[in-house]
Amino acid sequence: MINLPNALALLRVALAPLMLWLLIDRTNPLFEGIHETWMDYFAALVFVIASVTDFFDGFIARSWNQKTTLGAILDPLADKMLTLGAFLGLMMIDRANVWAVYLILTREFFITGLRVAAADKGFDIAASMAGKVKTVFQMIAIGFLTMNWPFASSLLWFAVFLTLYSGLEYILAYTKKAEF
Image 1 (cartoon, helix red, strand yellow):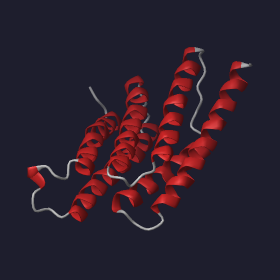
Image 2 (image 1 turned 30 degrees about the vertical axis):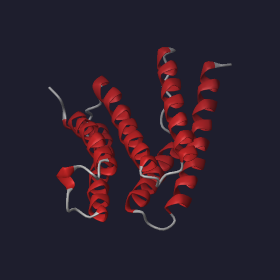
Image 3 (image 1 turned 90 degrees about the horizontal axis):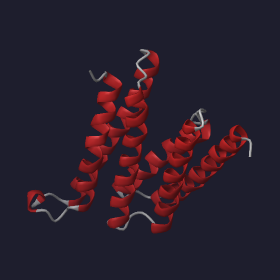
């Protein structure tokens, strides 16, 4: 039986490719007659709904004591799918800088691998405050980029800075626990 937090994570898994599709497939005959701005609105709405599920699945899992092994796998997978879909889609429609996307995604995959290695050694590297702030700023940057609003590029680069900084924190936490 899937609990509510896991159902929310699964919803995020389903919303990630939908958001990507809305960003990149604007010439689809299905969208004929829909102005590009409305496609931005639809993609942003899907992203906001998915982002809200990210908050609530963790909150509910902790508050209702519904943490599961499936949730521990699904939640970060859903997060990465959403981030990957958003940044790749925005890059493909020329709203996100390729190097910024590369740096963010490289850090995300590296730290995910590092957390798996840490779990294999029997210790957990919990999300730091910098990691949480990084996630918020990535989401804000994605929202601004999706809506093509001013300062979106500056927000993206600030998110890159926070992403790399929080990645460094994870590396330091791992090396401290692994006693290199």
